[in-house]
Length: 359
View 1 (tube, helix red, strand yellow):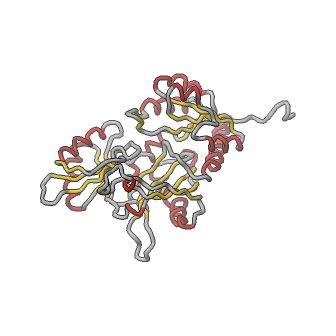
View 2 (cartoon, rainbow, N blue to C red):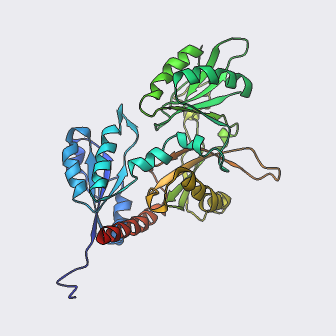
View 3 (cartoon, rainbow, N blue to C red):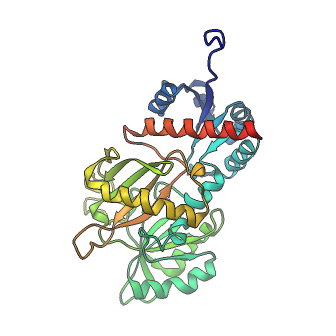
C-alpha cells in the first residue's frame, strides 16, 4: 500500500475531565494539565483531544466520546457537591456502544472504593478492617470495637480529598463521648456524643452504601507512599509527609506547620521502594484481581495505591498497610508515568480494535 497516499490509521482518544463551559471551549492539549500525557500519546501515534464534562452539557460530551476509539477518564468521585452518578451512567452507555473506556465505572466500583480495604483485608496489605452497611449495624458494633481496640479510622465508601474520613477515639471517663478529627485540610479535633458522630455519618449509607472501619496506624507521621500503577505494572512512587488525621499544632490548622509536605516523586526503580514494588507486581495486584474478579485488560490505565507504614517486622523491615486505592482521578504523576500510560493505552486500544474486528 502507498503509505503516502494512505497513511496508517491513527487511533483517537478523548481525555475526559470535569470543567465548565468555558473550559470545554478553551482547553487544548497544550494548555491542559495533562499536557505531558498528551505529548506521550502523540509519540505513540494516538490522536488525543480534551473532553471537558459537566452534567449541563452531557449530551455534547456523549457525542464526542462516541466518535473516539477510546476514553481516558480523570474525574473525582465528589467535586463541589457533585457526584459521578450521571457520568458513570453515560460512560457505561458509551462503553456498551464500542469505545474502550478506562477506568470503566464497574471496575471503579470494585477497586476504587473504600470497600476494597474490607474485601482484600486478607492480603499482605491488609489490617484490622470492618464494614458497616447500615446505620443500625454501625450503632451496634462500632462503639464496643472502639473501646476495646483503641483509635479507629472511619471512611465513607466513595470520596476524595479526605472527605468522609474520620479518626475516632473514645474519651476516657466520659461514657458515650468520642473525639473525632476529619481528614480534610484545616480540620481540628471535636468532642461529641457518639450519636452526633452517627448523625454525621448516616449520609454515607446513601450514595456509596457503606462505611469502612480500619485500625489507626501509629506510624502515620512517617508519611504515605503512593504507588502509581499502569495496568499491573508499577509506574512510579510518591512519598509525602501528611498531616491528615494528625492533630494540628498550637499555632492552628492554617499554620505552615500544619500543612502537608510536598509529594516527592520517584521512578519505578527507586531502590527504597523495591520491596513494595515486588509485593505489588508479584503478589498483591494479582491477588486483588482474583479476589475482585478483574482481568488484566480491565485494570485502569493509571491508578494508585496509597500505603501507610505498618508495624516493623521482627527483622526490622517496614510493612505496609493499604489506606485507599485511587482509580477515578489519579494525578499528579511521576515523570515516568506519561510514557507508561501511553504504552498501556496503545496496547488496550489495539486489543479492543482486534476484538471488535473479530466480532
